[in-house]
Image (cartoon, rainbow, N blue to C red; front, side):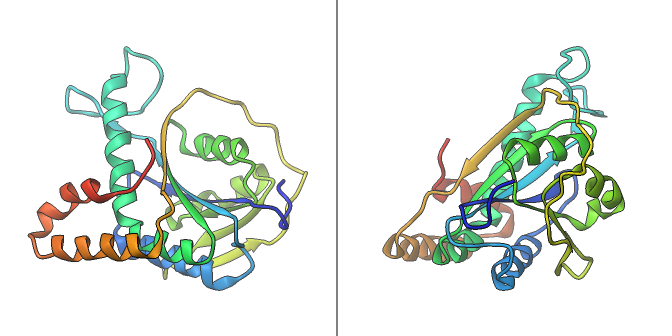
Length: 225
């Protein structure tokens, strides 16, 4: 795994089929920034959302897969893109706080099933130094501890971050790799004048009805495509 003295990837894994708000993301990122033992300058937080269920074009829920007969690839792509944009809009303030400490944020959403397989594969792919499991994933904690070689923490129901395993391990099982559809967007680093102008725009937007805010946010998101 990556050395703690070098820039590392810290994955916060979420079940993207669950609804969540800005407050939940904010508390998780703030908790990591305040701890001092997880994030360091130069690190990158990967906010990973896993869509293990999507809506078929015919209107019924189904498991995403690479089989065209089961799930429309276009439908999967649209749901993943929508979820990425939503997560980016909710993490703007957290990205600013991270930038002040030299930490970057990247949003990544992957459609695949089973969710445990997707999370394991994504963690291994980015050589994560830490994985923080969302509270909805705690029920499979024993499975992850057996499979994941990096350090592990969990988000409690109070949204506090608790470390479960503060060390890496080589005693893990081999995983089978599968093909999944994913999309990621890293935040551009903005200087302080740009950030002030950007936040002023958001304050202006907030005067509109809440139903309009989410649709307008992407117009002001500084991301790479």
